Length: 150
Image (tube, rainbow, N blue to C red; front, side, top):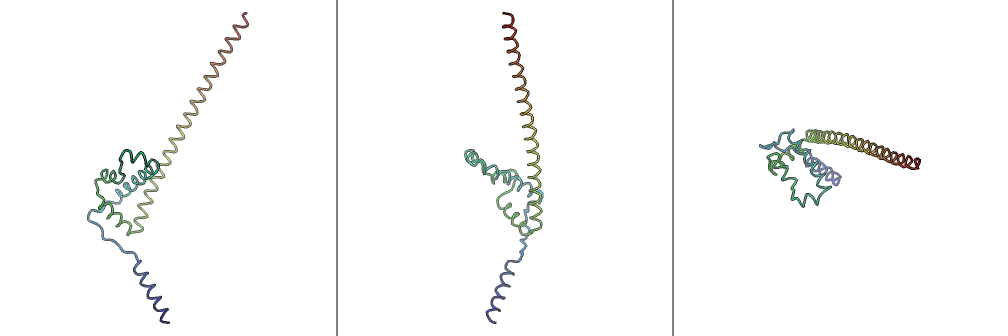
């Protein structure tokens, strides 16, 4: 019986210690709409850096430094704002859903541009092939006329 009481007491202590703790709103809280923009840019830059790490390193591009400069914030302000929003799970989820929606729109736009570009390249190649075929046919026609006249 005593062991059960200790286990239950420890379980309750763990649950209470893991309960959602709301972090106080920092004085220089980054507004939610700006936080969405920051996280969007950060995800784009992080993806680009993972695909071209050497080029980023060669160019001495610091992703976080770029973000801080672009949005006129510092690392502390970003960390405190991120921690605050993370302490509000529903707000944090909304922020990331907005970022995801922005990324999806950008992806759709880039795919549409890529499709149009591929279509125009394919069309240009067909036109080129057709014009080369016409040139060949003219050459064959001239040779035939020359041999017929002999």
